[in-house]
Length: 469
Image (tube, rainbow, N blue to C red):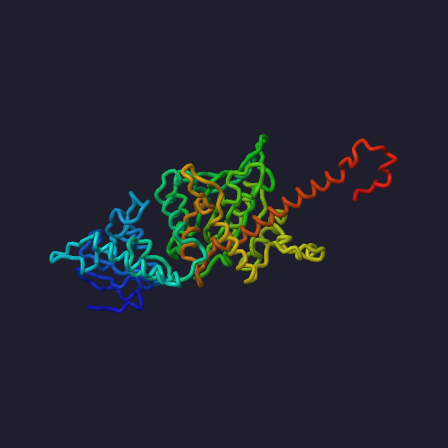
C-alpha cells in the first residue's frame, strides 16, 4: 500500500515485511513518523521487517531536518551505520549510506552498472564550472545541494545564512572527532559550600546530559547541565579579578508550557583584558536547559556569577523580568547590570540617559539586527596563526556544538536561544572594552595634568601658566 503521510500517526499499525520512506529530503515530521512505524516491524526486541529511508537534498528548514538527523546519527534510530568515507576530516565516524552524484550518471555506466569514475567526475566538474560562472552565487549552491559530491553539500540550506557555513560545519566536525576537545569539555553541576563558596562538580557526560542537538525534541531530557571550557582565572591570592568575565543570558518565559522549543541559555564570556588575555573575547562556560523548576535555572545563573565573580546581563523581555524579581527576593540586584551606557552610540551617554537607565537590556528589532551583525563579524574575526600559517578564527575556539548547530541552521522562524544570548554577549564585549578604554584614557589625562610642564624653567617665567592649557 501507499500512504501519504501528512500526519505521522498514519504510519501506526502498518504491519509489513518492508516499509519505505521515500522523498525523505522533503518529509516534514519524518522522525516522528519513523518512530511510530518502528513498532510495526518489531516483536519485543526482535525485528520482523525492515525500514528504509531515502531521499535527496536541496530542501530547507523542517522539511529536510529529519533526514539530516537520521543520516548523521543512524544508530539512534535503529538504522544501519556506515563508516563516513565521503567527508574529509570525519574519519572514524559513522553516518547513513551516501551516494555521490558521480556514481549515478548512467552515461558512464557499463552493462553491469560499473561506473567510469574518472569520466563521471570530469563530466560533473564541467557542470559545476558552468554554474560557478553564474552572476548569482546561489545557482552553484543550489546545484550542489541537488547533485552533491559529499553529505554536507546535500544538507546546505538554500536560504541566506549570515554565518560562514563551511567554517561552522568544519568546527562541528572538529568537536565531534577530536578526543582532545572532548576531554577539554567538562560537564557537571554547581553547588554552594559554606566555606569554599560555589563549587563545580564534574560528572560523566551520560549523567550530566548536556543538550547538544538542535533543534531538540520535546521528549529529550531538557534539564541541562553546566559545561566549562576554562575555569575562572585566579590571581596570586586565589581570587577571580573583577571585570574579567561577563555572564549573558536568554531566559525561557514559563515553567510549564506545552511549547518546549525555548530553552534558557546562560553563557560566560571572557572580556578583553591585559591581565590574562588567553581566551579573551570567547565563551568559556555555559548552561543551556529548561528545568521544570525555573528557580533552579535562576540559581545556576547566580552561582555562575559567583564562580566567575561577574555580573549578569540579558534582555528584559521574554522572561528577563523574572530574573530581576528573583534577584530582588534573594537580594542579588547588585549582580544585575544596567542597560549598557553607550551601545556604541556616543549620543546615548547623556546625563539624562544615565539617570534613567534600567536593569537589563531593551532589545528592539533594529538593535537585535545590530547585535547579529556584531556576532557575524565576531565568528570570522582572526585571532592568530597556526604553525602551518593557517588563520585561526574566533569560530575555531567555539566549543558549544549546539550553538554551532544553531548558527548552521539559522533562519527566519527559528528559535535560537543560544544565539540570542550571544547577541547580548557581543554588546557587552564592546561595552566593557569601551569602559576599559575610557578608564585608561582618564588615567592618561590625569597623568597629563600632573606632569611638570616646563622642567627647570625659572618660576618667574611660568607663573602665568599655573593652569594647564
